[in-house]
Image (cartoon, rainbow, N blue to C red; front, side):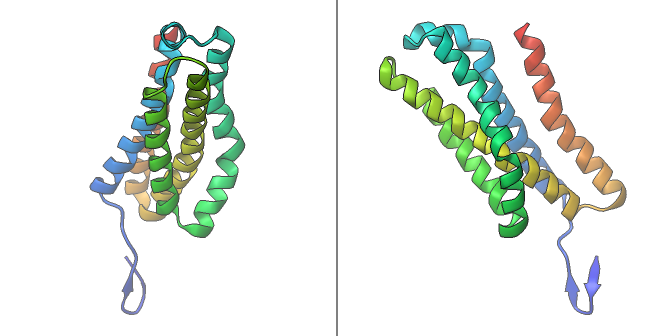
Length: 164
């Protein structure tokens, strides 16, 4: 697609779309898993049920607090940079959650990991949707947004169904 004489803009392709969707799915799968295994985690780690409830909720809290801020940063600093940052935060948060030791220090590690996962969502969700909007046009954009939505909302819906 031409914008001026001699210049072209990037056009989204299936490889980029697949990467974005897998990143969104990976985030939600890791973030939602805690809902399903919270009682077992609580027992294994020696963490109280109240603290475990905070660990479950803190991800949504951090996502909600920072989503507008990170969307604005994505517009100023670069959407793909913020998407990548979100992926790295998700990896770090998931590692912290996965490597949480038993005991009092475990509470700090678990809550930090879950907070990073929430911050990750605040990076990934608005920036990846903005990438889709910027790099696809017409029917291709409709398809890309549909696929992004399936990756985002479909996974969350299936995770909610598995809880209760």
